Image (tube, rainbow, N blue to C red; front, side, top):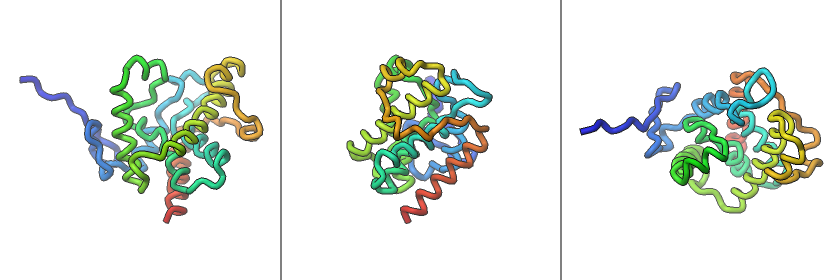
Length: 198
C-alpha cells in the first residue's frame, strides 16, 4: 500500500500548515510576510537587482485599493493587503500556468484564503463588490509592473490589463527592495490595519 503524499508544510514559526485542510490557528502573519517577500512575481523576469516580490505587489495593491475606495472600511483594506497571501505556500503562478493547471489551483487558493481571512477577523468569502474592487487595484498594479519593470510597452499593457487612470498612479513608482525590508514593511502595514480595526 502506497504511503500518502505529504500535503503540509512546516513554517518558520513552527506551525504546520495542511494545504488540503488549512486552519486559521496554523496561520501567522510573520510566515506570510516572509514567504511573500521571497516569492518573485513575473517568474523573476523583472529589471533590477532584487526580484519584485508578491509582498511588494500586495502593498501596492492595498495602496491602490485605498485610492480607488477612499471611504472603504479598514477590513477591506486588510483584505486587499492579504489578497495574494496564499502564495506564501503555493508560490506565484503566472496566469498561463494557472490556466494549464486548471480548477484545482483555484480550489487550493480558495481554501487557503478562507483560512487566512478567518485568522485575521475577515469573512471567509469576501463580498463580490469588494472582490471586484481589489481585482481592479490588482490589474492597475499589474499594468504598472508590466510597464515599469517587466519590459512591456504601454500599448501591450493596455491590451492585457486595461488602461489605468494616470491621475491615480502618477506619483507611484515601483522601487525594488531587499526581501527583508519588504517583509518588515508588510508586517508593519498589517499591524497598522489590525490596530485600526480594534
